[in-house]
Image 1: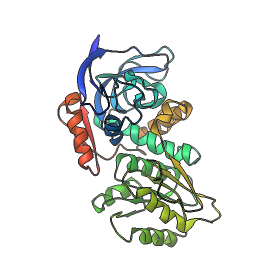
Image 2 (image 1 turned 90 degrees about the vertical axis):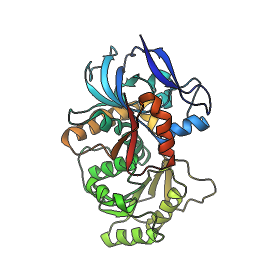
Image 3 (image 1 turned 180 degrees about the vertical axis):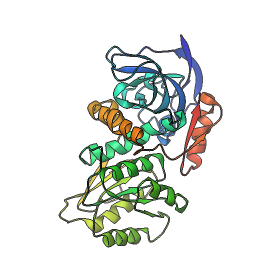
Length: 344
C-alpha cells in the first residue's frame, strides 16, 4: 500500500508531495497513522542548510501524534488502536520511514508515549521535541538525577525562552524535580509560565534583565545552579552565562549551562560554568534506555497524573501535508507562545 509524503528531494528545494510505500515496523517499532504533525525551527534548518540531513531524498519532521496501526514483534507496551505521541527519529537515524512529514510513520517504542483520551492529537504532537530536547538537557547533559516526584533542590533552575514549546517543557520538568524555577519570556506569557511552575518570570527584552534576575535569586537565598537556553536566538546563551557568572565559586560546584545551539565561537565562556548542548535525537540513537524512561515512564506518568500538561497553545495551519511549507514560513517569520502544526 502507498501513502502521501512531503519529501525533501535536495538541499534547499521545495517540499514535494509524492507517493511512497507504507513501511512495516521493525522489532521495536510501531507503525502510526499520523493525525497531527508539529513544526519546529530545526525542520526549516534541515531544508535550507542540510543540518542533520544524512541523504536525499529525505523525510524530515520529528513530532507526531496518531493511532497505532501495527507493532513489531518485540513491542509489548503498545498495541493496534492505541492513541500515541512520539519523536520521529529520522533526524538521528537518517531513515525516511521514521520521518514525520507523511501520513504513516515508524516510531521507536522507546520514543513513544500513550496519550489519554482527554489529550487531543494536536496537543499530543506538541510533546515529543519539547520533552526530548529539555529532557536530554536536564538529565543527560546536566546529569540531574532521574526522578518522577519532586524533592527539594538547593538551587534555582533558569529557563531562558520559556514561552517556546521546549521552554515550557523545561519549566515543567525542573519544577517536577523540585527546583525553584526562574524563567524569561515576553510579558504577555508571564502568567501562563507561572501556572506551569515558574516562581519568577522576567522580560528578556528588559535591558536590566541580568540585574533583575541576579537580585531576585539572591533574595531567595539560593544560587542559580543550572540554566537552559530553550531558544535559538542570538545572544541568549552568552547573556544567560553572564547571569550564571554571578553564582560561580559556591559550594554547589560548577554552574551548568545547556544550550539548544552550539556556543558562539566569538564569545568567551565565563570561568566556573560547565557548558553542554542538547540533542533531542539522542533518545533514539545512543541513549535508548534513557528515552524509554523519559517517554514510557516520566512523560506518560506525568500526563496521566496531570503533573505534566501539553503546552503552549496550538495553532493549526491549513492544508495538511501541503500546508507544511507555509507553516514553516510562518514559524520563521516569528511565532510566540504557540505551537504550529498541520492535521491529517
